[in-house]
Amino acid sequence: MTDSFDMLVFWAVVMARFFLPLVIPRYPLPGVVAALILDGVDQTIFQLFTSLPLEGYQSYDKALDIYYLTITYLSTMRNWTNSYAFRVGRFLFYYRLVGVVAFELTQVRALLLVFPNTFEYFFIFYEAVRLKWDPASLTRRQVIVVTALIWIVIKLPQEYWIHVAQLDTTDLIRAYPPAALVLAAWAAILVMISLHMIRSFPPAKEGLAIAAESIPADTSLKEHRARQESFFNSALKEKIVFVSLLGTIFANMLPGVRATSLQIAIATAFIIIVNTALSQWLARRGTHWKSIIREFIFMAFANLLTVLFYIFLLRSYEGAINLTNTLFFILLLTLNVTLYDRYRQVYRERHLV
Image (cartoon, rainbow, N blue to C red; front, side, top):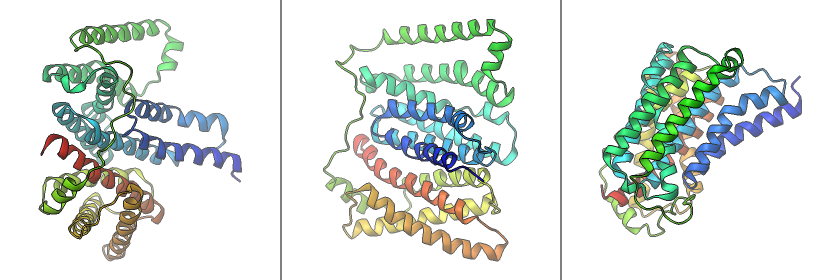
């Protein structure tokens, strides 16, 4: 029988992994670093303080990784003032999602090397710059050079090491101590490149810009533009792609899902269309969500009803979805879409698109 302390530790870690990424939009660099560290030590915590079997946690661990990465991407809509860096970050994020989908469908680990998670470190670079400088001053050349360095020098070796060779760094250093010197030299080279790049930056600001700027309180223009938007706009198309990719990833990661990837993609697209229609109908009636929590609760309830209806229809086609996994999926999906809708308006107002 599972010890109550074990379950307390388990749920404390899971809840931390769910709520900690929500700090990222307001405190980008501390939030992303904290989420990255927690992702790296969660299973060590379980091994040290519990006797729980971790096999069942692996699927949820991977799903929470994607969830954390998604919140990180959505925060770029809210905060990033350099439109070119934002477009590069968006490409890197979707490129990684496509790679994860391809891996989940084929189980070919080399695909994770072809589609590395460059976005994560690119985000950290941008937010590190924002601490002391205005990132809007980053040139296209600087953005491209940094992206190439992260991709080639950092992520390709890391992805190969973790996903293809499946080696453990600690075990390697214990077996071959000189490997630590190689890693230290590699880190020193990266530091020198960073220092060289900093010399070309404009004068630094006073203090550290740890917190992102607050969202403007005046939403009248946003409400007007939301009411005037056409239904099949670029936001709806991106949300369909965005959520379809997430749905396919979660469906292949979580246990007990027998629906096909095509069925999941169709279901998520249908949910987004219903979600968008409801949101625009409310906007045209003058409804504006002052609290993101209220909007999330309302949309989660609406999405849950939609999915339950879909599950009822799915049974006619010999598909099935575990109710627990469905609730987990709806929670993540609704949160991501709610943040997308809100932060996209901020991005549009900032860049007048």
